[in-house]
Amino acid sequence: LAKTTQPISMDSYEGQEVNITCSHNNIATNDYITWYQQFPSQGPRFIIQGYKTKVTNEVASLFIPADRKSSTLSLPRVSLSDTAVYYCLVGDEYSNSGYALNFGKGTSLLVTP
Amino acid sequence: NAGVTQTPKFQVLKTGQSMTLQCAQDMNHEYMSWYRQDPGMGLRLIHYSVGAGITDQGEVPNGYNVSRSTTEDFPLRLLSAAPSQTSVYFCASSFGQELAEQYFGPGTRLTVT
Image (cartoon, rainbow over all chains, first blue to last red; front, side):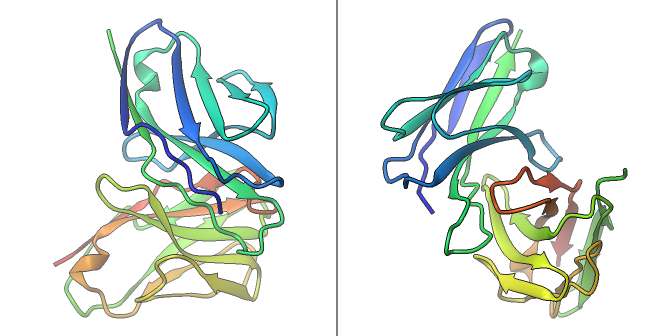
């Protein structure tokens, strides 16, 4: 599985747009990029997944440049409730390593008033 | 749908004791897995199952056993608890391959003294 690198922590004020970038230099052709969110004392929750260009849903947008060696999770107008840890995962639908997701340490986002 | 349920929510064990953490899902998901999360760390995969009767090891399988006799249930057994197994344990399930959206349970906080 491709290794990912994300900032350990980020701070933001309410109402701002937050962009969390994930590096995955050795991403393979078949790899998808997936982001999860985890609140304290809860299990992670799926946010968004993409392969290339841009994906948007009701929660976030995911930007993936042409070389796919990085991706950016964009959270529009964050609120206090967006304070959480965000994980970037890269994996292959047909990986020979079997069923394994590497969550890493994620990015701890703190939103303040 | 109850989603993914885990019991117990909290547990304290003495070193050497054994116990089973229960996990059940009512979404008819084929894939189920167990993760542990230590303070300041991401999630690490312990064991996973791609269907009833099929299990495999993840990143940190030592000291744990699993079985999958039904689609719904995926219990995790601690054979002889050690302080190093103090952690929060999350069970997850998904409909399809590893990149399918994973649904996580609320977690079990285990302390081994």
